[in-house]
Image (tube, rainbow, N blue to C red; front, side, top):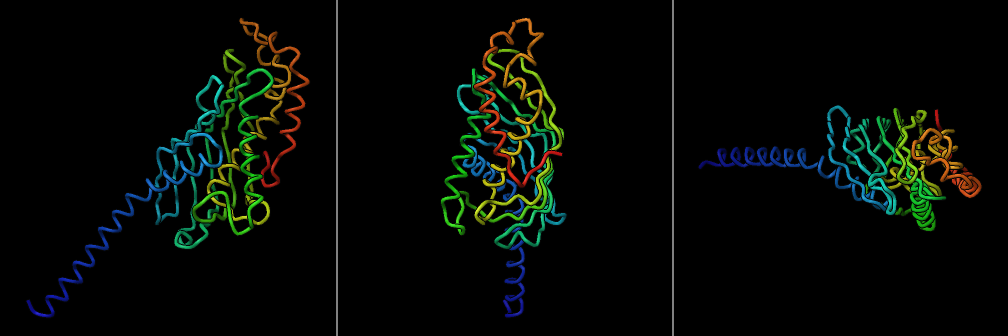
Length: 265
């Protein structure tokens, strides 16, 4: 084989290797995204987080997520706390190779939130406790570190549309309650900590909890338990009478923890 043919063969081989590597990365990256979200979501919330599908279009700068499920905390009838319909993310593709990924917009549509009340306490309280614990732990770290791993995020806007709460007291039939549109502008961490995936998941969940607690129907249900179930054949409303003061105080405390980066529209 002549020197020219040898060089040509090497170049062709190198080109084929690059193509193979690009194909492997292309088909692996969606699986990697799911793995990272599952790990960081579970870290942020303390319950199993599962994302079943991710589809990143690098050339269009668009990421689609679907099949996100967050498990409920123990001792409540529903196994699920959150189901997501779909999530559309715009990505600055040029930032994918940098230390900070720029995400101008995240739109989440069709969330289903399962709110279970057991006596004077609901699963919102337990999840809020986990978020507060993780936030407090993170705040004690230096500004150069974070409780979560992975690349830093620079997020412009998070929009939640068509979110519903499925409220259940004990074993009574659940009631579906729509929430107003939720919008967060440029979410950031306290103390200058970098925003990462676990932090973003935690802040979005926090805003959902605040929106649920600010909904009049849910407020009334958590305080007295009679409003949503006054026509129940099982008389569930009567069981809840007398719970108003204890749950009302708890509700007011949680409602006061609203994040300045988010607002209900």
